Length: 128
Image 1 (cartoon, rainbow, N blue to C red):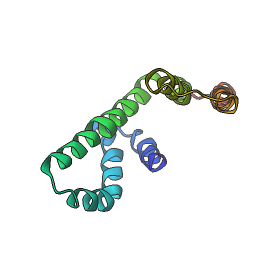
Image 2: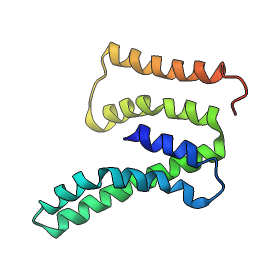
Image 3: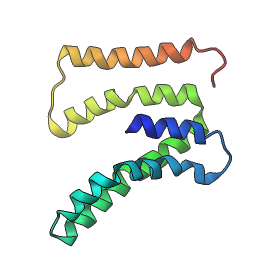
Image 4: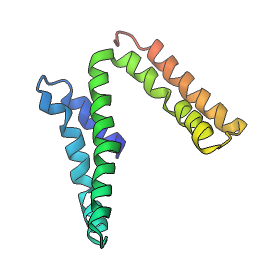
């Protein structure tokens, strides 16, 4: 789902309209609407539906809007390197908040993702 949203965002971010930043999020919401609607209708309590809506706004819409805004401000190279930090931040959060330990293969995987992203960006001609 994220890949579809990102692809739509890349196409739309070339436009100047501020509405274009929200279109990928709306497209993702429409794509997932059949599943989310049936799940929420099976919930018997109104508070469950409110919690689901809050999670959707706070956990999906706001972060996506901030990511697309950052992409516009910092440039492709910087954004790509920052995005490659996601696995490392997730591993650190798992350690600090959940007490999860990463094994050697997982740490190596995180390092390889970060190195690949940095290498790809560094060797890319003309990207900013």
